[in-house]
Amino acid sequence: MERAVSVMKSSVEEPRDDGKASPWVGAVLVKKDDTVDTASRGELRDGDHAEFTLLERKNRSSRLDGAVLFTTLEPCAPGARKLPKLSCAERIVLARIKEVWVGVEDPDPTVDRKGIKYLQDHGVTVKMFDRDLQDQINEANKSFIEQAAERAAAVHEDAPAEPVVLSKLEEALVVTGMEDFKEEALEDYRAALGVAKPELNRRLLLQGLLKEAANNKLTPTGFGLLLFGTTPRDAMPQAGLLGTIHLEDGREETRDFEGPAVEIPGQAIQWLKDKLPNPIDRTNAQRTEVNQAVYELVREGVVNALVHRDYGDEGAKCQLVVRSGRIEVMSPGQPVSPITMEQLATFEAPTLSRNPVLHRVFGKMKLAEERGLGLKSMKTRATSAGLPLPSYTYDAPYVTLTVFLEARAAIPASEGVQAQLSDAELEGWKWLASREYVTTAEYQAQMDIPNRTAKNHMKKLTDLGLLRRVGSGRATRYEVVRS
Image (tube, rainbow, N blue to C red; front, side, top):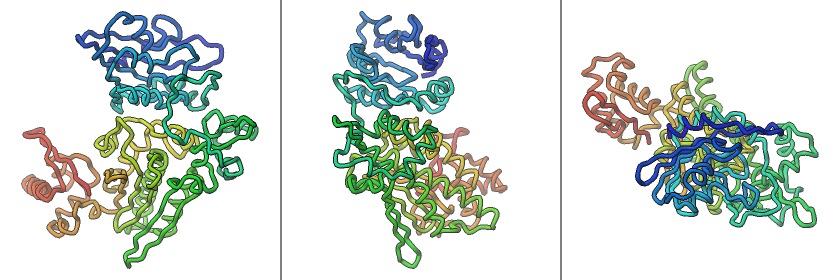
C-alpha cells in the first residue's frame, strides 16, 4: 500500500484543453513468484491508466494467476470508458487476478463503487487501504476529487455490455413523476449546487436521480424519490426514519419521518431538542457544550444510517431510539464489503459508500462528509466533550450506533456491574469510557492515585468485563469495553 502511494506521486499530468484534472494513481503488482512491478498514470503514454500500463504494457504476456494488485484509485468500471475500450476492472478479471487492494473510491459517478462491485461479482477479493494512506491519496487528488464530485455521469450512446448495478433504486419508478418531488427540497439542492433552475433537471438526469422516457417525460429514480420525494414511503416502504422515545414513566413518544431524506436529519434533531431539551444534567456551561456534542453525534449517526443502509432490505427501516442514558441509531444491513464491524467499531473504517448517489447529494448539501471524515470526527468530538465513546454493534439486521449520555449508561450489563463499583472506581470509569485504550500509568496519572491503587482498579474493571487486557509485560494496555 505504501509503495503504491509512493509510485502515485510519479503520475504524469495529462495535457488537456478542457481544464479537467487528471488523477494521480499508483499501482503495484505482486506476482506469485514475489516479483514486483509498478506503474503510475501516464507513465508510458499521456492519459493511460496505471492498471492498463501495468497489465497491458508491462505484463501482457505474463501469467498473473495468484498475483495481488494494489491500486490507489478504484479501477474504472464497465461503461466508464467509450467502447471498444475495456475498463480496468474488466482487464483485472481477464488477467485472473484474485485479490485487489483499493486506495479510495473514484468519485466519478460512472465509476463510484461500481468498479469494486464488478470485481467482487467476478470472484475478486477486494480490500481497502488503511485510513491514513487514504488521507494521503485524497490530499494528492484534491483537485480531481473536487471536479469529479461536481461532474455528473457522461452520457454514452453505447451501453456497456455488462452494466454494473449497485441497487435497483437506480431505475426509474414508472408510477411516479416530477410532481412527486417536494419543491422546497429541490430548491435547497439547487442552491447547494449553485445552478440556475433550468440547469437543475439536467444535473438530476446526469446524476441518476431522474430518467428520461421515450416520450421525454422525466421520471424519478428510486434514489431521486428517496432524496427529494414528498412521501417516498408511498412507493418504498423502507424509506424514512422511525423515532421512539422511551419515557421513564413507561410511556412512549413516537414520530415517523416520512419526507425527503435530505430533510430528515434536521427534523430528527429538532424533535429531540423539543422533547429532550437538556439530556445532560450538568452545570449550565458544561451542559450547553455537551448537549451540542450529543446532538452532533446523533445527527451524524442519522445521516450515516440514511446514506449507508441496505435499501434492498424492504422490511426494515432506519430507527432513532431514545432510552435511559443513551440514544440509538439503527441502520439496516451489515457494513458494505469489504468494511468490517471491527473497523467500524474503532471509527477507523476505510472510506467506502454503499450508496454513492445518496452520499454525493448529502455531501453537496453539507449534510455528510464525502471522504468519510464524519465517522472519524465522531470519536474526537465525543472525547473533547467528555462523553463516553459511542459504540457500533450488529444485531441482525441492524448496525446500531449508540451515543451514551453518561458513563454509567456505557457499562455493560449495567444493573449488575455498576453495584460492584466503588465511588472511586466509578469515577475512574467515567474517564475510561471516553477512551479506546489506556495503560495503567495513564490511568494513574489521570486519576492522581498511587500505582498500587491504579493496578487494583484496572484488575477489578477487567474482572468485571469493563476492560480487556491486550499484550503483556511493558506492552500491556487495556481496551475499554462498552455495552
